[in-house]
Amino acid sequence: MAKRIFSTILLWAIIVGSVTVTPEAAVWLIAIVSFGTQWELYGLMQKMGRQPFKTLGSSLGTFMILGPFYAEKALNHQVPGLQASIIAITIVAVCLRILVHRKVEDRIETLGATLVGLIYVPFMLTFMARMLTITPEMSEGLMLILWLIATAKFCDVGALVFGKAFGRHKMSPNTSPGKTWEGAIGGCLTSVAIGFAFVHFAGDYFPAFFKPHWAALFALPIAALSIVSDLVESMMKRAAKQKDSGAFIPGIGGAFDLSDSLILTSPTAFLLFGLLQ
Image (cartoon, rainbow, N blue to C red; front, side, top):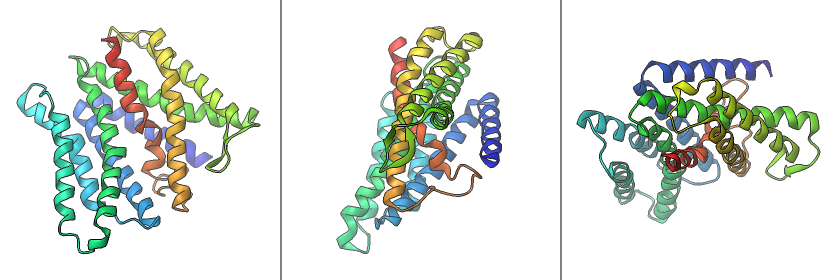
């Protein structure tokens, strides 16, 4: 537990430090986390007997996040359809690579595994990077990213605390035996409280459209999907017979264990923010 607390504090310091320096630092942090997550996802697939293009796929995933940011920065304006075009380019690249894959009988399976990694991790996390330009002021977009991270990650904390105190009914005993319905409810309530408080006390730094009552309302689906994201990763780890996706973060595990709750919540938050504009 002590290692987990230390790692959590250190990671939050890195996150807050990155997003308060420059938008570019925030995009690079998202790209680094995405690369590590995708690399570990491909590692889990290999444990399952799949053979994705690990290096190529992870590199293309990083390009998927950094490419649009630097292209629009160079052009000094947003380009309609740029994000979709870059995603399409990464798919083309994988398809070209598969043509020279030595094991002919594994080509389709390798193609599918590689594309799953590209879609599930970097594609989903591109929506977090796109929050930077959801308003003319990138500093407001940075605050939306911080709100998303806090709301999603504190659901884990609330679920852990409430689960230990009141947990009786298992949520998914075959996938994640430690999770309970009581913990999930506690996690959702924690996210609602954190989401509301964050905007209530720092409202001047958020976009004008994002009021505390919207923050509390949006925190509920974000919290619910963060739990689903965690369960999806647990399914993958169980299929690969692994306890953690990695081991470089003491007390937490790997990059996938860190980012799992942000994968399904990033596009959802981007959509919800867009509805208010």
